[in-house]
Image (cartoon, rainbow, N blue to C red; front, side, top):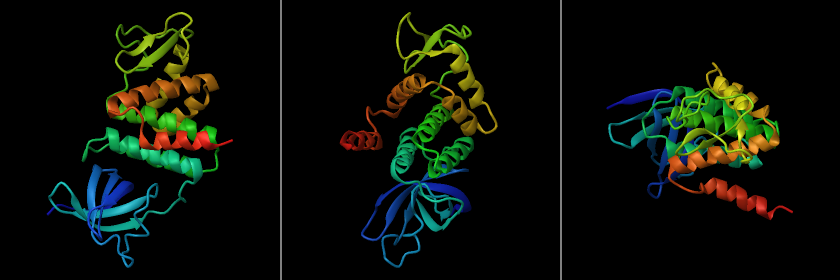
Length: 254
């Protein structure tokens, strides 16, 4: 039997497996996304009930050889409180992206560290603008780590270097390409270059967050739309459940 102990991880999602147990989809640093059965987790006396919460750092132990392993223990890793309000929905959105784009048991330690940094930002009182910029940074890192982000330092089809003041757009099928004259939604080559450099930083989420924060409001909106197109294209869905929920809630606000 394969046993893993004291593995840093986060709960992405869980669902009923039986009257008393849950299947937990967890994102771990050394083993990637794993499916675990938490036996008896729904019982009032279970130690799992107060621990298996999303957006909380955990230390997990499991065993077994089947596709769905058996969760042996779960301990809170400490360090922060759970995000609230819109920040909580943003965390759920990041979780759904990971579920959509990551294959099981494909480790991405750098992405795990970026996710942990994102959760820390969402739990802070930085405000909606900072949280939105952190999501854009995480989306860029997720696309890069899963092999879906083309180089942001050159045009994808021609490999021509970017001109600092020329406009470029990121397309799902064409990669980074020059925008037509007068075409809206383009970012200047200078901005794409700053994002490309930030993604290579030793602390990529912090560096990319800073690069995203340096964009104008119009540029941040354009980047959001372009990244959403890539994520929808590679994730196989047009609208994520959490994104639709966020839009529905915004529509109800006066």
